[in-house]
Length: 111
Length: 115
Image 1 (spheres, one colour):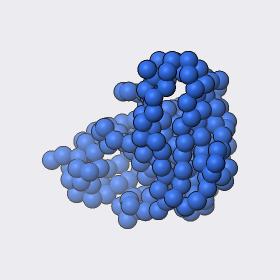
Image 2 (cartoon, chains in turn green, yellow):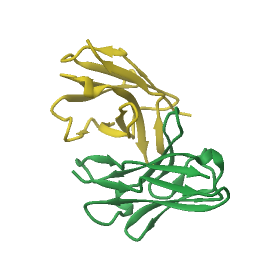
Image 3 (cartoon, chains in turn orange, cyan):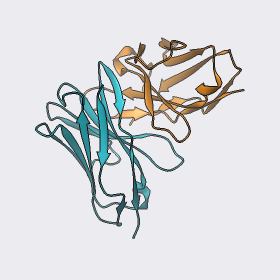
Image 4 (cartoon, chains in turn orange, cyan):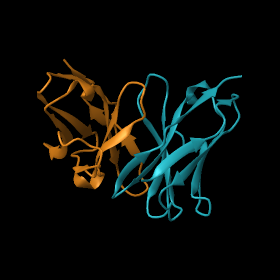
């Protein structure tokens, strides 16, 4: 089974910009992996911020954007707010009949 | 707006079967992938498996010998059965809808495996 890797932790200053990335042990992440980015704040239910690489939900603040960067999926936060402190998970599909896999999550601190 | 709600016992004895149902409202159960995801206390998310509206299933290799996911389109529900549970299966279990229109999560339900 593929392993999906994320930075364990990142820190960003309020108002700053940070990029979280998501890699695969099988090779480059592409649009064909349909990358999802999931946000989970402490004690709360996970919610999808980004799906299919770069699509935002109606509830996703515009300061979050998804892309592919250097063979990895990326989530960029521009203009960080204290309320953006959370765990962020990447979720990849590996094709029909193959497992979907979560990354281990990135703990983002706004400080 | 689509809503998902998990239901089932909060306590299951070791070696028995964990059974959960996800009820879907605000949208049809057709045309999407319906997943179960779990999160052990203090840990990350783990994908368990999905059922497609066509009836095809796909399970996590680490769990596939113990799980069955089924769909009841007449009730707009899908279900998870996980047999031979141990304490390691203690987790919050979420049902999730995913498709080209995005991902929607249920509120989650805590299932504790204990005698």
